[in-house]
Length: 628
Image 1: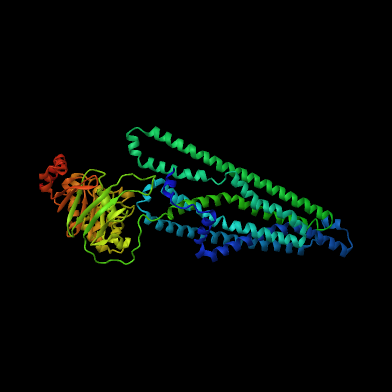
Image 2 (image 1 turned 45 degrees about the horizontal axis):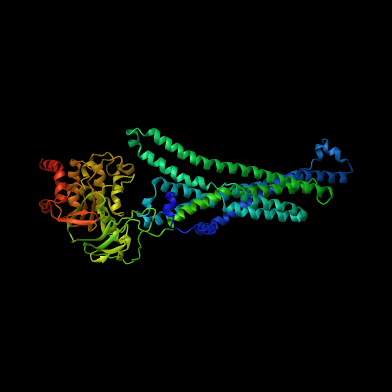
């Protein structure tokens, strides 16, 4: 099962009609502009038909003019054809040129209007679609978005959104004009000679309906190919991110071979797609050629029978009918893009339609609440309702925890015992299957999610630093913060000296994921965010575990300023960072096995005491550094 299928499997499979209707709903604010684009496109092609028709009929009209002159002057028609320049009928010439120029001008103007308005609508709809997708993803994060490989997620947002653009820019208008304009052409042909319509109509219907059906039968939708793009993107993205370890372990050739194998699988889909496209274009040319030959044959029969003029009406009707053929075939040419647009929309909607990770039913914000945390008989299992991702093991089964306001409580224990899960549940990124969690005596579900998140400030080992300035990264803590507030938060986080030494100061670029600043500075930026947020509860999830001892000490100083007077929950592997906590809880297999202050736990001789002894060298080094 692909990542996409596993992630979106719970979403109901919508019909193509439902997908189209939903895509069209994004166009509602732009209906008038789209109607303008459609009208301009129809007029453009009618103008093109007029140009061809007038040009084709002009020779006959001009020659008829000479015949009329012959009758009036009693001279021979041939004399006019052999160079009697004085009798050239400039009136006919300028009249025909004028009609062609007028039609051509209309074509130029309407072509500009169509292209501008069509793409204006398409790009703005795409912007609205991206926004809708982003806001639909937020309630899924991180419980369900974590299941996506980064490359596949990028493929969905970037590639799939771009693949929807042809639906608005190159599908709706061609579909409408492929029906409207040929009908207008047939109506005009009917006024000239009704039987001509009986010859043209079957070929128009064939190129409009049969040809797209053949394209689908040939496999020209490229769906298999599109499914593989996300997998290839994920593999390439992972290869680039892990290139350091790949080189260090000499795994380059194997990784390259795997990439080649994946690419070869995708190439088969490409070959099928472009092979079908080539077949479709060849069939289109056959349809057009046969249609033109049929119309020319029947027109000749009519001309020979004296029903239509062989020099005026016959060439005009054949020339005008060609526009209808290419419009109908154009619809088939865009059919592949249409199918790909539907597939891309289905992929995106499959994510957007998933049920939120948690139900956000509360509407009334709770402004003031006591910063006390309480877990009561909590049972929790990750992805318990998803057989493809379930770990089939409960993290908590009857877990209980109380943290009084203003207290600093630390959670320690082996990896995988549920420490970070406590933070995840407090932030309502997941909800427990049983039991309750409360803040200030109020169940977390009583708080709107946005309001609940304002009650917590988080500093984690992997605090994300965006590719922006230090100032803007700190501003995440309070989007409307003044420069003075940002400066004060940076000072309390210990960033003042670093910023002062930087040429660009607060406008220093952090780089992608903070690559242009050190690990210590990244954590200080995260701390500055938390200080700026001024939340009543602080959650520290291994905030210093990736730092060296010296850097850790300076960051710990900033953390102490952050947590002063606030309810604080610290998760730590380095026991040296939590020796001064009010209470330390040792978690083993999802339960609290030991609890007490640092000195009490050392005396108990349990897990904490053994781990503290193992880390004693590090602790001694820390103490020596502090004393110096």
